Length: 334
Ligand code: SF4
Ligand code: SF4
Image (tube, rainbow, N blue to C red):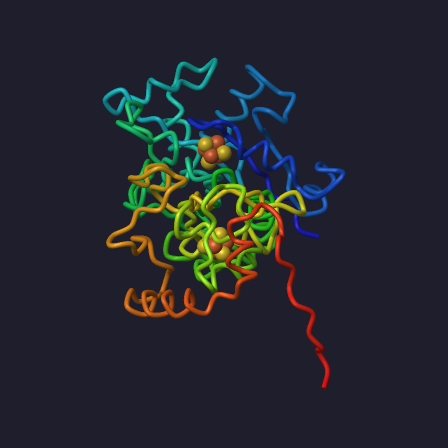
């Protein structure tokens, strides 16, 4: 059996929600799951007992090349302010900006992984006027660059692996780390934004329980309605890359199943869509954000056809919070 993969997890400018999400991994024994997967958590700010000098000594050893590091994981955006000094976030007890630590540790690590949309793109932390000059490890929203620069490649040859999401699904994190542990994550397994394709080659729309309503453009008007949330309530599930409705959260949920529109939290810049998260901007009655890969003319033609063909059941249930018209019973054999 291979030696375990040593993982160092740092938290920077974020809410810690990605770590909280990780703890919802589908297992009764989280440490055993990591051990079975060949992962050794060298240090995590919330999950490890070590603190103070012990941690500083560990980071020093790695940064100075005296101890090898397999994976540097960063959760949260990198705070470059004020004026590029990084002094908005000093690593406690060291007086040194976190961005300096991250640069030095990334230079030593075999793999560098951004956990969450903050670490990948800047995310919520970079919203508004971005007074902290927050950015991601290798991106600033959709622009390549970020803290480490577009050309950065870790010693193992991969760019920063962006496990985007706000928060990330625990399965996305664990599967990525497991793939790194067994050497099966190659550049071809990342999409154009360096997200692992095993979840980013899917759309949130896939497996949504509201798909029948989508087909007929039978739309919800209030958050509690059963209908599709694309037309009025801001749902971007047809554009957001993630498998949230096929790899459920906590084994059974997703945003759309809970009655919330998908806000495309795995995409760069999601934090500032330019409109309220729960409303759909339209031009001449047509949603501006059309489904991925669908030409506008086809969308318009199919929508009007679908609306004219909507069954009464689907139309009425779409604007109700429970099924008011059950499906007709049909003989299903000849
Ligand atoms: S990506 Fe979202 S959940 Fe994760 S740290 Fe940032 S704000 Fe929190
Ligand atoms: S609610 Fe969103 S994800 Fe679900 S079917 Fe409608 S557009 Fe697709």
